[in-house]
Amino acid sequence: MTSNISATHAGHWDLGGRQVARLGYGTMRLTGPGIMGPPKDHDGAIAVLRRAVELGVNHFDTSDYYGPYVANELLREALHPYDGLVLVTKVGARRDEEGAWLNALGADELREAVHDNLRRLGVERIDVVNLRMPGFAEPEGTPLEEQFTVLAQLREQGLIGELGVSNVTQDQLAQAQKIAPVVCVQNLYNISQRRDEELVRTCADQGIAYVPFFPLGGFELVDDPRLKTIAEHHHATVPQVALAWLLQRSPNLLAIPGTSSIGHLEENVAGASLRLSADDVATLDAIA
Image 1 (cartoon, one colour):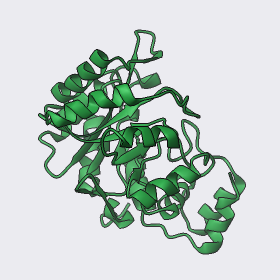
Image 2 (cartoon, helix red, strand yellow; image 1 turned 90 degrees about the vertical axis):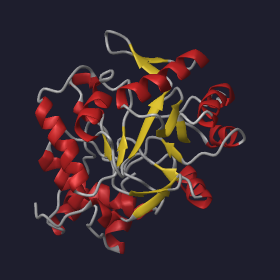
Image 3 (spheres, helix red, strand yellow; image 1 turned 135 degrees about the vertical axis):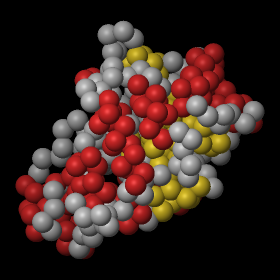
Image 4 (tube, one colour; image 1 turned 30 degrees about the vertical axis):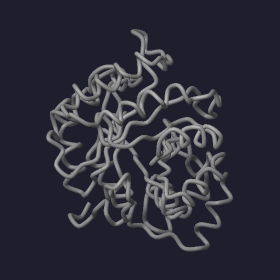
């Protein structure tokens, strides 16, 4: 990859008063298999994080339940004191010893999770905290007023800069907004998973960032011949085209692809500068 690639080629977004490059980085893949335990290559993980900053990435998405604890500890080792960086974490879930995903939505659990993130990241305030609600491919839609109120109180205490929500419906977003401002929504969305089209538009209209998790398709890349054909035409990779489609979809979309490889990181950053034609976009729009 050439040295002039930069995450800023994708443009910027105002995330709670902080300008972030629309191409960010998700730390989940820095952990061991099953998002559990330490990485196979600790020094390699540190190098990836530092290279991301060199490439203009300043938005890092993380959580204390990645590992658990591993992702935040790596972030602190590699990037503390985070000059010019925006850290976004999630609370509302935990992992058991077998790696199962469990809800952790009690008031005390949420407070403890925020304090755990503060301690492991080594900060006095977290830039953005997302409340992760139950659900995955489709949110369960359970009320969130009690949980979001807890986070709003922590924000008033100065421990949190801004608030977001994850795995939510339109109604849940509206519930949260009655309690405190919401600067971002983090749901499942990518070129082949577009259940949230209306929510993306709602967020754009309100100036809210929409941050899709699994922006490149999930643990397995989107597999479609139309995607491969367009990638070949642009002398690009399939992930680069999927990422470019996402960033051209709406200006409030912030992508946070994760990787444990510097090569893949640089490939993702280069994909942010890829410009798809109207015909390309029309073809890709038909994939879902």
